[in-house]
Length: 203
Length: 164
Image (cartoon, rainbow over the protein chains, first blue to last red):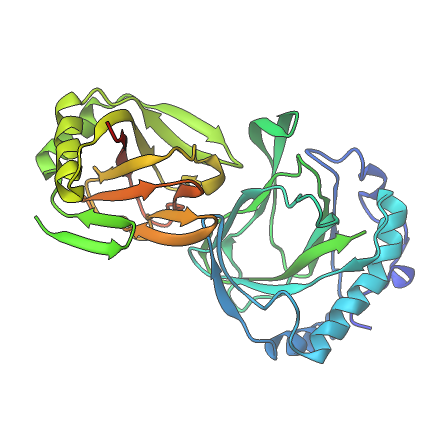
């Protein structure tokens, strides 16, 4: 078991910050450091190394990533184990009906970014988003996860303000709410290499 | 002046604006800041440049071989970290001119046009050049992210023209 299943974590389900899930600002999120046991990290990295990576680019983003659906059985098993390990606890603590997760690996190189967006799209059933930061041979400068405080009228945002920066520290998991106001971005990587796996939990 | 037929619905004309004229226009623009980050982050200004607008309108009419009349214009400036997303585009129809008034090429600072989400024309960073794009239904425009890794300033004049 690569993922540190909740039952094996100290003080589970009292993660640091868990009591503040609904109070976390600018919108619900939790940060868990040392998410994977150190002796399991080489096995995790070995699974990811077998997965092909391509460049993805639009007006919103530029990065290298694996395909939305993993091509290797090992990565599909890793994804399913991740969802199985976390979905029950996340459902309990967020109050959201989590059933499954997807998973892609990302490599942000210098000049790569993901501009502000909310992740929320009608019909996609995304409930929570997550990012897990992998060890990097060249830890990135930049590449922080930035959360924004938003005001909304109807479905339109009327103001947006930077509210929190989360450093992409190796072996850190970040889980955050998906809603109309969950505006966030990955700041441009200025140097180094930002490696992560990320995706969404679905109802 | 050269004409570069880039795609069926877009054209780039080099040398549409001279360096000294672009510099003079840049010096006259008075900007306000736009920062709704789910749409864009940039400076914008109302250009009071009737002679320049008349000149580029005439040039576009000559290239397209038909009469065109001025509808609206605005100037935008993008600094490191700035961008304009497609979803922020006003999706107006007509002929759009994008005049690059920048002082220097900025790598990666491009204007992309999409039709129903599919890219069909790209205007690269090319100071002095002007693109001409037919904007029909479903066409959107975005200004690419300007990297923070190097100092940069992108200034563009967007002019929308209509048929008489």
